[in-house]
Figure (tube, rainbow, N blue to C red):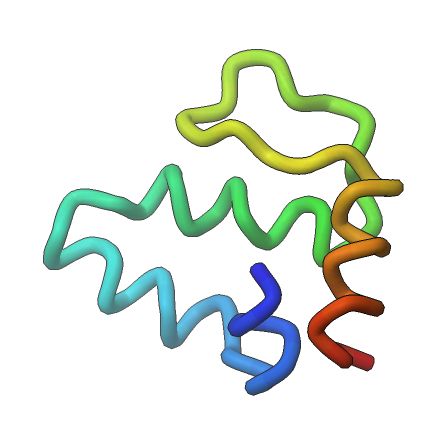
Amino acid sequence: MLLIESEDIDQETLVETARWYDLEPTVKALYRPLRGDFDRTDGLPVILPKKEEYMALKEQYGVA
């Protein structure tokens, strides 16, 4: 998520690549919190950080 955000990687571009590796649901799930949706994590194919954790990591790694 930090890399996606810091490099401003377009979701559709990454999803297209993810399809080749059968990772489309995982990539789509990574973009949810980047759009501000940290609340619903049940049923996702990946464990996502809580908002506070992610914000702390952004600060630690200098991601604006």
